[in-house]
Length: 161
Image 1 (tube, helix red, strand yellow):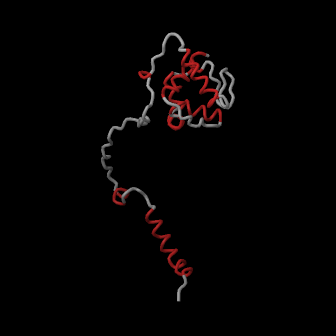
Image 2 (cartoon, helix red, strand yellow; image 1 turned 90 degrees about the horizontal axis):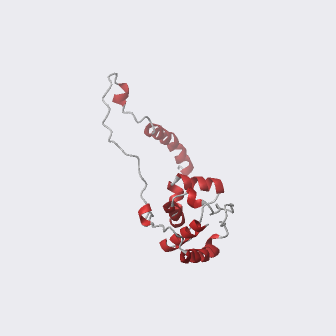
Image 3 (cartoon, helix red, strand yellow; image 1 turned 45 degrees about the vertical axis):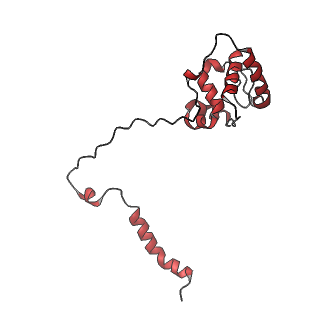
């Protein structure tokens, strides 16, 4: 009587042979042995893949910046900053865990700043600048679950610095 161990040993060479046969070349044998070149199959023109944006992704058209800073938004944003942001960010240029916010408006577009607050994970996965920040800080900002209006207020705070 065969045990499962001896059956496994009996099928091992057969399994290995099937694996080698299955992992062979992708080139069909007749094409590999042919001396006459064959015309390549036409390749469809493919544009580089553009990542699909998440729902609510902010574009430049979604933001209207006034000439003057909206102090009401700044007041609201300071409350949010104190509750959710101050542990990792400062209101100066100094890095805490994440970058300091002073001057960020001169380095990043407003829509980028808002998307970083609203769609952090998507930005980290798809945006080279966000990826560079993660590399620099060795951390990813957690989702703060801000609304679009709250993120807009935070942008106004950043503008005010």
